[in-house]
Structures are given as C-alpha cells and as structure tokens.
Amino acid sequence: MSGTLRSNITPGITVDIVLKKDQASGRLTRGIVKDILTNSPSHPHGIKVRLLDGQVGRVKGIVPDTRSGS
Image 1 (cartoon, rainbow, N blue to C red):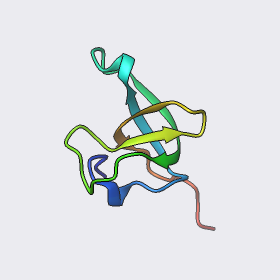
Image 2: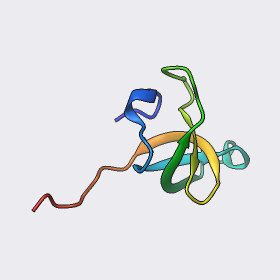
Image 3: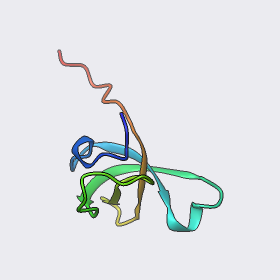
Image 4: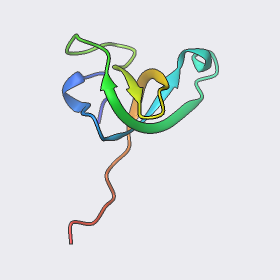
C-alpha cells in the first residue's frame, strides 16, 4: 500500500517513515501514526505524519496488520 495517498493513512496504523535528518541515507523509522500532518490528498514524497513518540516524517511504507482475526 502506498504512503503517498492520504486515504491509505489513518491514526493507529504502523508505518515506516523517513525523518528529515535521515533523508540523505534513506534510513527508515517504524512507529504508530498519531497525527496526519499533510492536508492534500497525495504527496509524491509521502504523507507527513507524527508518530506516537513525537517523531515527524514522511511515510515510505505501511506495515501490514498481522494480527489474527480469530
């Protein structure tokens, strides 16, 4: 699932983001979305979010929910 579409991002999901300081290296940080900071429906570099721990970055990937429904 793409991190460039706002409709794919909801608070509470787990995502991989790239922090501003890590843009050159591409290092990813995993966390849970607290707030969506991008207002537009899409962004070519990823939707900007704030994680529960306060870190801010652009979504590069959405981690699939592996919890069992049973």
